[in-house]
Image 1 (cartoon, rainbow, N blue to C red):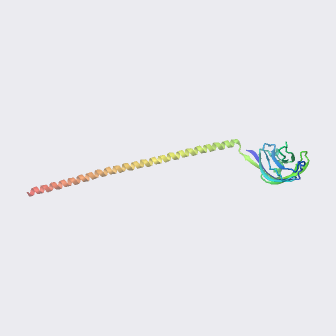
Image 2: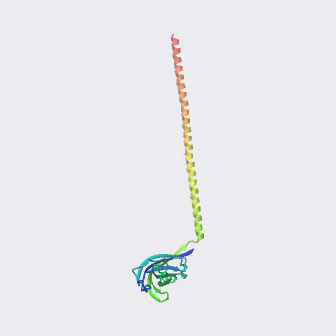
Image 3: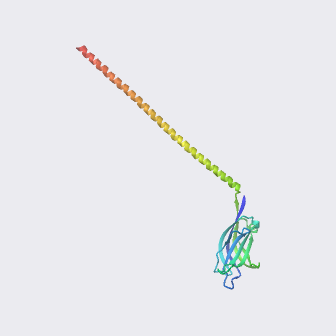
Length: 226
């Protein structure tokens, strides 16, 4: 399995900042955060126009990176947001935190507040930034395992489709059996009806014969009397 990481960082506040905008007024600071060397993703807080040498943001971010933590560090720049006419926003101060040391101290998944020293571009310490930080480890399945899971899903779908087809076939055979049984019952009923008709015809013939015999006897008796 490959390992990825998430760094959850809340930039809380900064204090004792040097005023890099002293010619025009107060600082207008915001924070820029990223993970080095995976610097492809940078996030930043909103500016705090009501601040100067102190500022408060309390903004939370989640920054993913591939690791390893031995080579990674959390980078924070506190920057002054200049005017539209400014060609560059000057850095008030920067801070760095090696993630391996942080994880060794607090472990993975534990959220801890830290106050970091800010350094001027010259390297001189000037100001502090307070953050709340946690590092989470994310285990990702290897591509081969993902392919195996995909094959298992395809086989499961195929088995389900075949089972459904078998059920439909059995259902059709059941309906056919019921139809054949119904036809057999109908044939039996017809046979019973035919047999009943023949029996009635025979009874009627016997009755007619009896009447003829009786009438012949009566005729003979009358002849003898004469």
